[in-house]
Image (tube, rainbow, N blue to C red; front, side):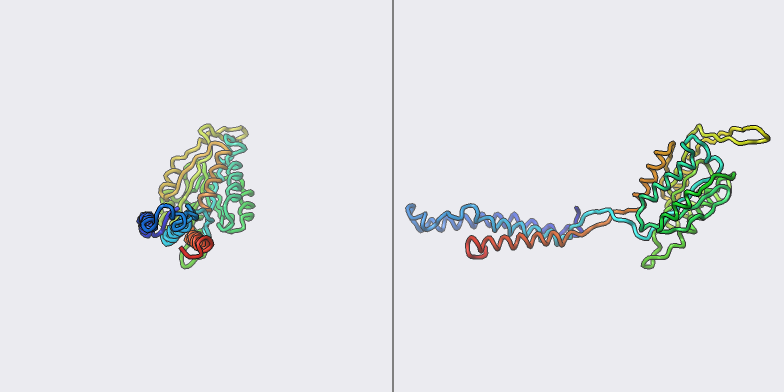
Length: 319
């Protein structure tokens, strides 16, 4: 818990002073009562019937004052709430190298499963769209709060095509994010989650595209999927050819850094899904301050009334 106006808490320093004054006043009253009577008459002149309970109303009043001062300091706590109006674009590499089975069932298959995990974890207040890319990017689903539509688009991803146009995929995703309507005159936050296994070799450079994203306030989170042992097979001139396709995370790391985002690596399907689940929480929720002044002040008023009620009940007067 924190306080929006912590200087008000200085008022709590008055409580020890009041406690000291109360103790001095109690001793003064006892001495004054004893000064005019002999010892045999003490029980009738200064009876001790209330005992220690006579202090309870004062204690409740002191606690009430402490709570009311704390309420004036505007206490608040941090809570996690869904982000409203944000847009997230999922960009998936579908080039031939994504058919490698070093990640089971394949790099693309693991990416599809992980993306579905993301959609299940992201709040419905977030609009999510989908882009696929190989030599050219293609917008498969515009940002929508109907995540079933985005899930259907991701399920239809098919590998094929030479080339990896990461930079152009980022530009396509940025264009989709820009279509989101403004909220209270401000453009809602946006992010790109981009999964690939290699470096860009077609179109605009991804670093340049990431810098554009940063200027627009859009962060890019990259996932490099695959291992160094990745390979694919193809038929050429009637024979089977095996081509190594080791994962290359360096450029993806630079791309994420250039946008102010973060880079991840996934060597298996479990790790890929865990990353997407983490991103669903990170991008879909935020910390917000919840005011507690009303609750604290209410507690103070309850104690104030309780102290007054006990004083009237036991002593037929307000303390």
